Amino acid sequence: MNHWIVAPIVLPAILAPFIIMVLRYHLDLQRIFSVAGVVALLGIALTITAQASGGDIQVYELGDWPAPFGIVMVLDRMSAMMVLLTALLALPIVLYAIGSGWDQRGNHFHALFHFQLMGVCGAFLTGDAFNLFVFFEVLLIASYGLMTHGGGSVRLKAGVQYVAYNLLGSTLFLFALGTLYGVTGTLNMADIAVRVAELPPEDTALLRVGAVLLLLVFCIKAAVLPLHFWLPASYANAPLPVAALFAIMTKVGAYSILRMYTLAFGPEVEATQGLVGDWLQPAAILTLAVGAIGILGAHHIARMVAFCAIASMGTLLIAISLFTPEATAAALYYIFHSTLATALLFLVADLVMERRGGAITPKPPMPQSGLVAALFFVGAIAIAGMPPLSGFVGKLLVLDAARDASNANAVWFVILVGSFVTIVGLARAGSLIFWKSHDVEYAGEDAPEEEETDERSAPEPQPGLAFTAVFGAVAGLILLTLFAGPALEYTSKTAEQLFTPERYISAVLGGEE
Image (cartoon, rainbow, N blue to C red; front, side, top):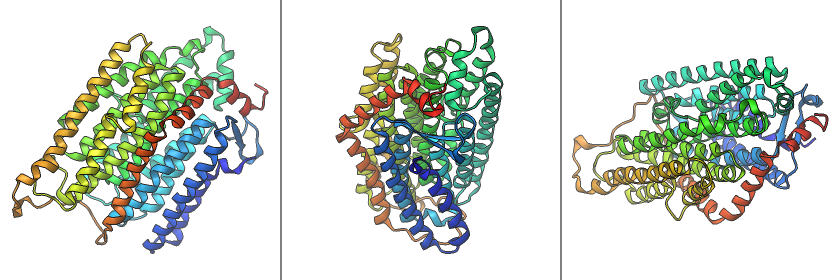
């Protein structure tokens, strides 16, 4: 068996407790091991992506127990791509947390960070629906700690709301899994696909209930309207480097929809036909509309970026809901773009809040105003989908894939108007924060706001490292634009692989389906 498949899970699973037990009183060593761990994870991700690029689907059987009796990890093009995205996102964020001093404003930042990476990578690699639930809980437990990192009553209140809402989602997840197990007798994804295909039409009522419950759970994770209410307050009040990492968490929901509804509940399954298209598409259109309006009406930069995350998820889920190989290829390209662009804007928002507070109102110029303004401008162009960055390419791909859809006019209208409203909202915020600030004379009462924190030691920021990390995210967007051709070729082959689930089933079940 190929042990590289489990390395993205095993590495952070070993490193996180090592940091807690051995390095808990040595922040410098924590930083060294944390960065080294993320770099190693990036190397592993590049290796398994190269292995998956040939089109072979590889299976790792834990304890050498074959599926469907044992737990399996599955490496295909999509899982490898998502692990690579996680590693590429983690590196600038951990460097920014060190450079800005966020990692020493509370306990165990680096350990929780790696537990989070473990949960995310596990969710992308697992071939078992119950273990998808387990990895969801691992990443959520770590995110609870990261959410309240640094203390403060406002952050604690937002964290409690975040915990309560996600516990509701976890409960629904268990109900969905129990229903599916009662109908099919298995929770291995490939085996579910085989059993579902064999069910007679008169016995599929409970199967549809389970599929609907699963879709609700994944929509909660993906912040789809009207299940999005947890995201604006949670992301806006979390430490913003943590919110940048959370940009990948909504993509776990989108990934799960693609995985389960192309494999277990594929287009040919009559009992679940239309769930993604008929149910998800209207909700995705409303999600994009509400996100764009939220950007226009936000009065705080962190909340504005949270609505940017919602709007980008709306665009992504519109592409997924079209449920064709062409639209799925566009969605996979847009996943990469929107994750990097949202993380970039969260990091820029933190630079702004550390220097002049988060309110979108004119205030005296802040240190490094020109550099921060340039980074905000790049992030705004990327998230709004303006040329020349990858957001423009991604939205063009989605629009092109929607040309033959039954409601193509509605999709085009919402995406184009949503992009325009996003541009207006971000331009308004940028002009108030950076341009009109030069018209305000400094006075003592206009000093930058202090964020409410419970710092255990005075941070020692390293602005050079923080800016380097932010420019790393910018470099990722530029590379995604320059290599849009090879990237789209990879996503097209990935979509083709997703819509031919027979190869996945044969690889997991050993040809005995």
